[in-house]
Image (cartoon, rainbow, N blue to C red; front, top):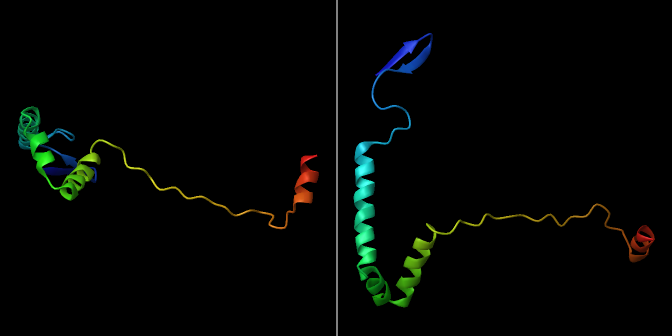
Amino acid sequence: MVKTVNGKNVKTGGRVKGTPNKATVLNKKAIENLLEQYNSSGMFSQDFLSLEPRDRIMIAERLIQYTTPKMQSTSVDLSTENTECTIDVMLKKLS
């Protein structure tokens, strides 16, 4: 329930901000346990190797995003201020 005090909304009940939902925590833990058992049993490796090469690459590509940070694109500015600079002018500047 939200109550208005001095023109601002104040939360008066329910979970404290940032507290995880119990059902979400339980579901995540159950999935984590299931995947841990699947991986440690060796079935994951067998299933992965039994896939067609195309499917194996597709699965590996999807899984790698959880272990490797994504690269950000960068831009390079190749413009120069003085485009009429000759070798002679540059040599004079260097000497």
